[in-house]
Amino acid sequence: MMARRATVQRDPRIAGDPELSAYPEGSYDPDLTGAPARGRGAPTRSRWSGGGGRWLVWTGRAVLWALIVVIVVNGVRAPFERFTRQNTAGGSAPVSADSEFPVSRATSFASQFAAVYLNFEAIRSQERAARLAPYLPDGAPPQFGWDGLGRMAAGAVQPYGTEIVDRENAVVTLAFQSGNRRQLLSVPVFHDGETDRFVVSGRPGILPAPTPANLPPVPAGESDEAAETELRTPLADFFKAYAASDNASLQRYAAAGVTLEGFGGAFTFVELKNLDVPLVGGATRDVTATVVWGVPSGASPSAEPTPSDPGDMSGKLEQAYLLTVVKQGDKWFVKDIRGAKRSVG
Image (cartoon, rainbow, N blue to C red; front, top):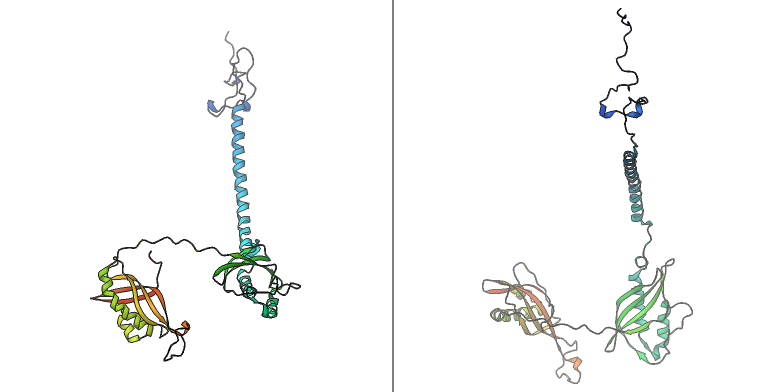
């Protein structure tokens, strides 16, 4: 007898099999499926711990958050730094002491004080005390350290240097000449910022000035003797016209387009002592000339000069000049005249 066929169609899947996924087998996620089949027929599969992969995920997240933090911090810091720089440029930053202390005016004040302080004579002590008073603090001794005896004379007071102590104090050093000695004077100076006034704040100190520097010799270059011979006579005539400000003669020796002015009779030409013409330069040369000028005595001329008084006699003064000369045709013309550079020796 044949068994009756069931009318209800069964699911073709075998009971206990895992539900089929719509994704390929490689992307199968055991956490999203039902419990695996149990029993002898169930396939054996090892359980994935997930430890290594999750560490990579957390590491990636940490790196990402670190990048986000850096970006945010830089974004906040940039406008803050710009704002700070603007405030600094606007004057809110502290200013150094040397930029606030009025050095030039303190030097002028100390120079005037030194001109009085370094000159004294016993018979004029009261005059000196009166002249010192505007520079000294209240209660200072009138002669400010001088005992009222002897004499001293100094001149050529010039600024030498300034040491800034703080916003109110400085030591101004001045160079001066006394007799045949060049010396220094250090003057402590106080500046009151509220009243903008100065005062000598302590005893000055006289110091020896540095000795002259050792000047190394400069090797002499080759000279153009032929050009020197050509130039000696016209340059002598040029300096004669230069001393007298003879404009007609000056223009005859001046290069085209150049106007030269002379001494107007303040000196007289004596001689062209030396002339150095370098070999290089072609039609344009820089030549060095040593000229002897006659210095008028200033005394009224007399028929019988008195040799016993040298001041009544005309003197001589050697001067060195650097001239730029140009040759046009067979003649040389002066383009420029100025003080000479270092001497060759």
